[in-house]
Length: 148
Image 1 (spheres, rainbow, N blue to C red):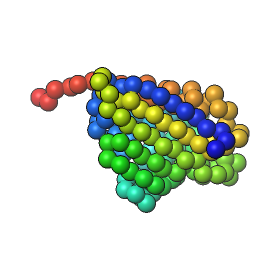
Image 2: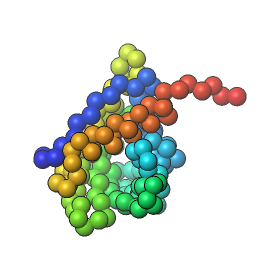
Image 3: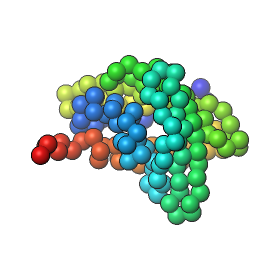
Image 4: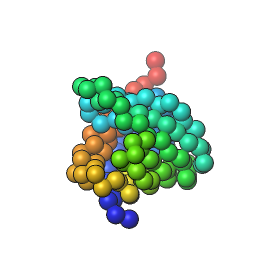
């Protein structure tokens, strides 16, 4: 598929913790928006066929970018496939995102493929945004904080 983004990351956290960060609404709003953005989840149903609606807000300008989607496939702690679509008609079309979680000696190998990115979005901007988000994901899942 054209306009595909391929990301690979090793996280020093177990797959079940990383997987949970992709589906837990409180976790998503903490790590998913790239630097300079906040996130709001308006609706989320994290099961196959379940739908979600989210928005990112540019903290500097206050401008919102909303999008929605549907979970296509979920394999517990191993795989997530979902469809994203922007609400903005200038960014029409479905983007398919697949996320693979694989246990490795030091934690989790994470592979993300995003396909169908609208032509008006430069690929390098997608990579930059994902890299920022994945840095925030690592900061969320890698610390081991003991219960009190």
